[in-house]
Amino acid sequence: MVSTVEQWSGKKLSAFTILLLIFFIIFFVIGGSGPKPTSAHLVLFRACLLKKVPNKESMQRPNECDGANDVELNDLSSRQDGRYNNIVFFAKIPPRQYTMSRWFHMIMSTIRFEVEEKLEGDSEIPGKGRLQFTASLFGRQDDTKDWNLIKVSDGSRDIVCSGKHLMCEDVPFFQLHSTFYKSYLINLHIKRLQTLQRRFYLRDIWFSIIHWNTKFSKIFLSLKTVLFPVSLLLLVWYGYHTFGKGRQSWLLERLAFTLGVSVVILNLPVDWIMLTADAPGLTLWHDLRQGFFYAAICCFWLIFVSEHVYDEQPNNSLKSYWKFIIPIILTCLATLVYGLVERGMQINNPFHTVWTTEDVIGLLWAFLILIGCLAGIFAVVLIVLIAMAVLRMCRQRNNSARDKTKSFRLGFLLIATLVTGLMTIGGWIAVNIYEYQLSSGETMSLEISSAFQTGVYGLWNLYSFAVMILVSPAKPREYDEITDIQLEQRKTEGNDSSRRRLIHTTAHSESTSM
Image (cartoon, rainbow, N blue to C red; front, side, top):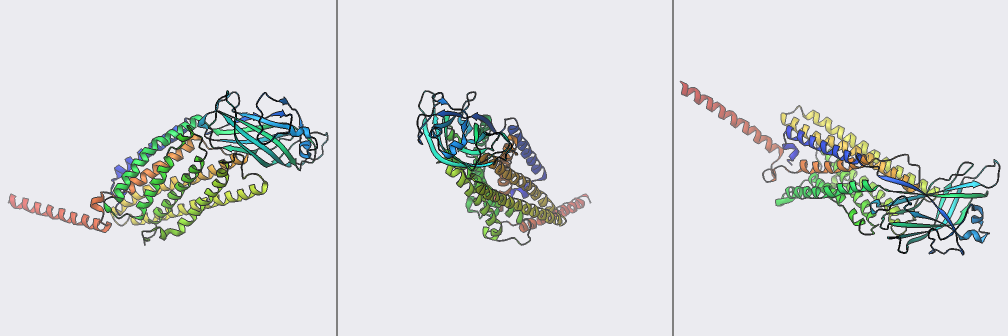
């Protein structure tokens, strides 16, 4: 197989590298010029005292209820006093000073309880409790229209409080994967609070919402819209030159084509649909195409590097690399299962979450740590294989000038593979930690900048473009059936013929002068 990277001159390859670096910097600058990817707002729940016990589909509108202050949680837990069962807390999204936008794409929310000990004293206060509630979510397009019921659900959460004036930890509340309505109303009816044995006053319930920034969403969607036709045209060009005219393709060429397909799917700007329709199911589409891309690019990395490590090349089939492919597929499937369990269920019920009890949270932590360890092992294997490939190319540079040139050109792709691999794996781990913090209500110890997100996204596209251009067969009509040995023989024969012509010309000139 004679690829484009083996035919380009050093100047052409250097110019191509500089061009890629310029575009890579541009992607970082585009993200760095924008705001943070997400914004957070804090809203205070208001308490409403109803005339009767609310049912699941009851609704309280702002300014249509009597105020209720200092609700005693122990009475709510024991349910001995019926009048406390009539209390419903409500909050409205967005807050008064903000406006709702479909560019938010999603809303993640957490709730935090602020309670105070009823009796004076320094006695030890138990810090754990379990909350059982009924929550309702409503939406509407216009303030003049009625509220539409989106979902009503029963739920439970473990809460942990600490301090004299107990400030409880944030717990996940609900997650919307489409912001179709211009305003939302949340009703929260506390049914039971267990294991808090002392008596407390409920001072406040804080409601925190997290969403994508409008400007960042526009920047990211604009990048997808611009890159989609470019990646599609390049994929069509690559497919024509690789598979056209009945040419027999190589495994590495087929993997490069698969990588190009995954990038085209990744760039497909389906997010425009969310601006015109209520489409929460697109979240699953995002998870599927992200998993497909990770599987495609990881398989390409390992097989591409392996072909430049071993002297005896394996067969032209994926079966020869099953030891590499199976762990990659299993890791991607495990990540997909987690996404389906968490976000897949939230399409039907926004209040569903797997982060409910300490036992489940511990199990999920172990699951995420296992996936992170697998990603780390993959990074180590990739680095070792690249180091072995570089050492092998250094030994080959002493053979001939052609081997030196070939090693230099293939070294370019190996370095690009190493940089892209490390940034992708690091970004993947960071995104999973970031999503865990958002989903579980943990304190935000890690934030992903806009420049990093657009930079990594641009790097994926640039790497796939470079792979398709450089791995594509050079002059397919001429070189389809020509091996590297035949090319070397033709080069030697051409040098011998030129030498004979030079000797003949010199002898003819000398005879003429005599």
